[in-house]
Length: 134
Image 1 (cartoon, rainbow, N blue to C red):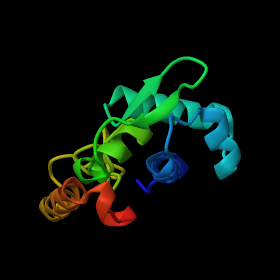
Image 2: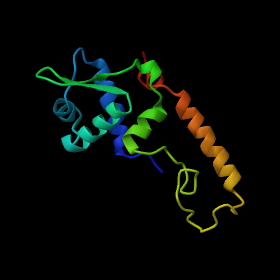
Image 3: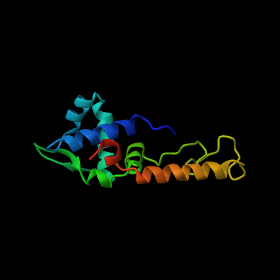
Image 4: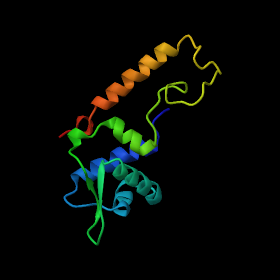
């Protein structure tokens, strides 16, 4: 799976939120980043549900980071935004089907699983602070 706009929008939103001195609302973020508000609102809610963002209600409400950017893995952001772990290949361990109908008997399956595992480990170790700076 290639990362979709949802992951891109999640990363852009998190960057804007971390630079804000106060909670920032979905509408303000959508306008600032030129992202459809309804789509962004779903992403922000998913990030909050996963404990990446905190949602504050009220007149001065909006979203703030729930943790330091050095504690938020890129893998957790992608999972929250996409609703599933990032799979590099259609037949990775996250896919329900094999495009060739050879689940379990594919000769390159061990390589693909190893590669997927390395990508997972890389994304688990890559923190938001690594791509946005401190």
